[in-house]
Image (cartoon, rainbow, N blue to C red; front, side, top):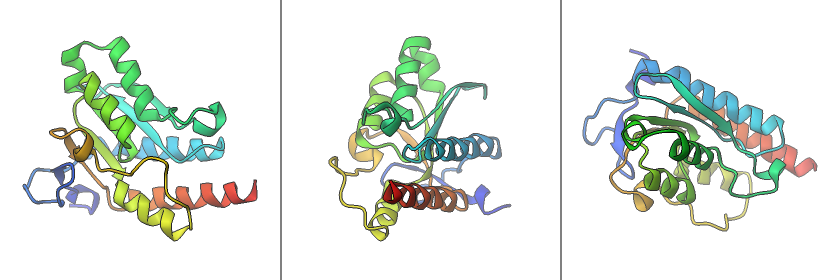
Length: 185
């Protein structure tokens, strides 16, 4: 069993392993790695390091996106929000409930609300809101205009899995890379 296989599922806001629910399956890992790739593409494009993939119950990738806040000049251009919009327009309620959103970072309050309002299913994230807040504080980044809340405080009852050890360090490095570029601008 690899370290990545030991990740446990948890209702948002609970400590890992509290309920003993199995973590992301090995089949989930390619989607999580793709999220990190999309986050890297976002940084390369001058945007914040976030990427997300929407996957149907049968494992088919339906849509993916990366953050576009800076490049589009719109602070709501989060990939999780875009995938919720896409799902609402292109999937039935049953398909949305059975789908999974994989993402490089735990949903912010705006994205968690959008996810819940359109009725999407499971969320699997690489890095948590708590981790990101710590990383940004270490980098000297000031507070966000929106309070960083775990998904459970915004949309209780969703099945949430994460963080993913190993991949989370890659996301941490992307945040460092983005902030170092931001300082050079």
